[in-house]
Image (tube, rainbow, N blue to C red; front, side):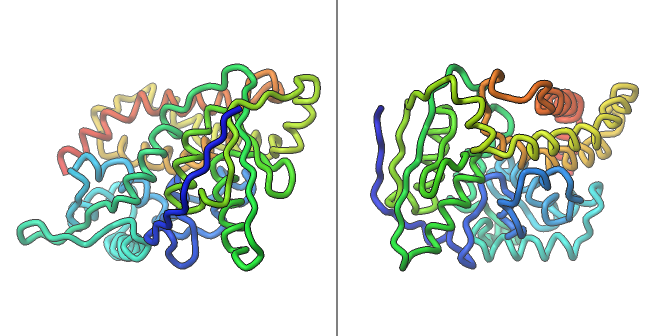
Length: 309
């Protein structure tokens, strides 16, 4: 069972206002409660700041990692976010080290920081390309933090919960092995890897697993969050199936941003357990299928709108 431990390389840009930047983008804005229970995840309204984070994360890299302020304002108009809200959100992203002010020719704009690119690369895999769990190999993280650095202990718990790890006991967290690489990278970006040992390939007693997973993860709350997402957006799928998104790319863009904003936290709180360890029926299956359908319907026309802004 191999273990990895990396040297302590603090990335100061991540530690702004003594908060860890969440890799689903939810705490790029310092959203309160970024690691609250999964039951609240799909039960929130979509505040302007969260919609802006989605747009920045989804499209700014396609603009060469830079976007003009005026272009960002035009992009957010169909979503119902006005110019003052965009400017306020951009200012907060700058303070948190996510965006860097940069002029190109005479145009004011912002570029993504190196930290932001790391965050978004992990987010791409978790949100859009998350692999299904295969077999029952596990990753365990064991950490020990001096009392004098207890803020780092909280940061470790925050990060591991945000990546979908379950809490076995104090200082011991567990997840399927397919989360190992993202965990190692996230802890390194946060400068937390010096405190933790990562064990990859652990095997557990199958007879106890079904009972244990319900202790390590709140699957009822996660399932309820998936069910709320499905209820919130099922009618949207029916509407776009009957209409033509290509005929109204602005509206398709607005709906795609809303769907993705509501969705993007869920794949992080979901550890991706093997199907036989989940309650049946599992609401995550139909919610995942709904998101895939809406992405297939809306992604291309949304991109057409962005290309014309």
